[in-house]
Amino acid sequence: MWLSKLYQRSERDACLLNIRNDFAELIMVDPVTGCSRYITLHAPLKLINKKVEQLEEKGYKCQDSINISLRGLAAV
Image: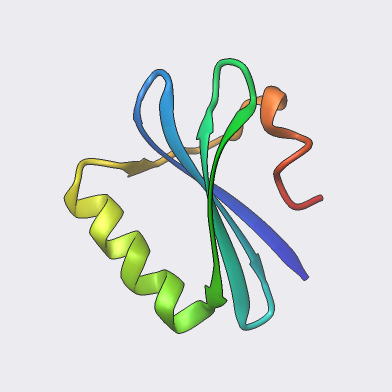
């Protein structure tokens, strides 16, 4: 099963989290354009969870929805 979450700090600064079973990826994205910033982290879920905690400390907030412009990067 795939799951996607969007953590956003500002209008154009966000991180897309895609989870599949016990493995995940984080992709730095611009939610307005849907473009990836080519900064991607693939790792086991335990390590990704630590990175998500760091993002939240930096001011990223989990969003209720994901912009349609990110459909190509989000887990479907």
